[in-house]
Amino acid sequence: MTLFTIDEVRKSFTNGEVKEEILKGINLSLREGEITALVGASGSGKSTLLTISAGLQPTSDGQVIFEGKNMTTMSSEQVRKVRASKFGFVFQFAHLVPFLTVEEQLMLMLDVSESRLKKHEQKEEVNRILKLVGMDHRKNSYPNLLSGGEKQRVAIARAIIHKPKVLFADEPTASLDSKRSKDVMLLIRELTKTLNITTLMVTHDEEMLSYADQIIKMSDGLILQNVD
Amino acid sequence: MNLAWKEIKKNKVRFLILGSIVFLVSLLTFIISGLANGLSQDNAALIKDLPEGQFYMNEDADETYNLSRIDSGIQNEILKIQKDAVAFSIQMGFLNDEADKQQSIAFVTSTDSKLFENVKHEEIILDSSLKDKGIKVGDTLTNNQFSGKFVVKGFVDQKKYSHAPVAYISMEDYKEIYRVEQMQLVFTPEGDSSQEFTGLQSFSKKDFLNTIPSYSAEQMSLNMIVWFLVVISGMLFAIFFYMMNVQKIGLYGILKAIGLKTSRLFKMIWTQMVVITVISLVISITLSQVFNMIAPEGMPFSLSFKTTGQLSIVFLIIGFIGATLSGIQIKKIEPLQAIQQGEV
Ligand SMILES: Nc1ncnc2c1ncn2[C@@H]1O[C@H](COP(=O)(O)OP(=O)(O)OP(=O)(O)O)[C@@H](O)[C@H]1O
Ligand SMILES: [Mg+2]
Image (cartoon, rainbow over all chains, first blue to last red; front, side, top):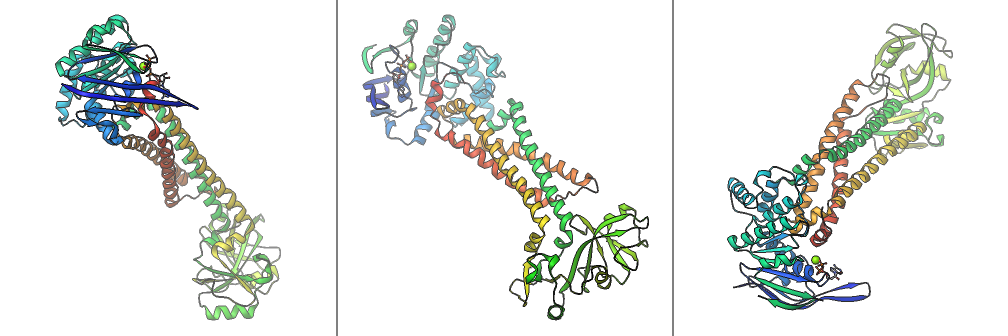
């Protein structure tokens, strides 16, 4: 079933006098519970497409339809609500909050997504997800004491703790070695399957493609190829 | 989840530095304003302690009470109309104590009034600061221009003029020392500026204080220091909050990306500002009040809770503005920027 549709999306930036079109009419659908991988040369517009889909920047033209609603016409507060409750984010860097412990990072996400769970239920849920990503033993640590891979696993846990519908990941394994990358990828795959999360992921790593259900190759602001 | 408090707990040093700056600047402001007030008491308590009212001096006196000579006819007329009105004179002078040591004082004499001490011929009432100089009730004091002797009848608290203790003497003795018949000033309590008398210029209490040359110069420079300190501290606040926020732009971007409301970020910086400012102010208020109590006798220092309170409110408002101004950047932060900037 199609959960997410990108319809003739265009994006241009003006650099001084020059207007550059970065996305030149993209059409794409994400199916529920599947991992879609975006690949392509550097500068082809992958991150731009991902952030537009996630409601982090506006389109110049075209529509982004999520759960039947056009996100491009929503107010910024409505988009924020969708982001807080329905989306999860993992980026190249973990971007954890430096003054919160691992456990608090996840509690904050539940708080932001206006979780209806009671306090102790929230703690149990945090524990459960931390076990899933293998970080439950570090729940009282601050981010500065964690390794890169550990931070990334916490970031993934934060991205899924509130049971989002869509997970957006921009090169989530780029800061990790190949062993850790594989672990993280396996984790994302397992989580998307068990929690029925739809994932859109940008990657440079050929190896990661084996975990994807759909591979989209981009070049120069256009989709070259759509491999199922 | 209380993000403001969690951040303060994790970054104690950073907030401690900010807090100590607020503390030091506010303490300095309190001390200077205590000094300003103390000096103004020392300079003009005699006048400041009078109730609100109108002061009159001769129109030809060039706004200098020393040059004023009030015609006795007009004086009698005013005193008749206004039964609380009082005519008085002030002159700086000297007294020799029993050990023949010279004391600098301000002679004050007046017509009968409960606002001034009334003394008889050859009697004198002194400001209590002269007790420290070894003068007691019953001592006899002399003055070069005065043929008789003054017997000390008693002391009054906190009556100073031009940084000198006040000495009340009778009109008769005053006239002998200074060889003048007329009084310099007339004061009408509760009078207002609408009341005019021919040949006299009227002043409100504030205006009259400003005609005392040393008083206005002193107060102006001290008040200027106080307000400069307030402005400087305002800028310090703003700059500090600004720098702290600039460091955290990436963080704010991420928090926005995961869906935190901008208003919650504002609440976070406001809470931090209030916590830091209130704690620092409480400490500096306490210290300045302790200083107020233990300040050495001769030191002109007087700091009321009212002044401290007013300044504290000004500090809070300034801190709030500083935090809010730097917070305006938060509103502008695009979550995307932060994500692309790499690790925070
Ligand atoms: N805010 C912006 N203003 C101007 N140009 C931009 C902006 N964001 C992206 N671009 C340009 O758009 C193009 C595509 O950028 P994008 O980040 O989407 O590429 P990418 O495919 O993710 O590349 P990489 O693999 O290196 O991450 C680049 O040429 C970039 O310079
Ligand atoms: Mg990119």
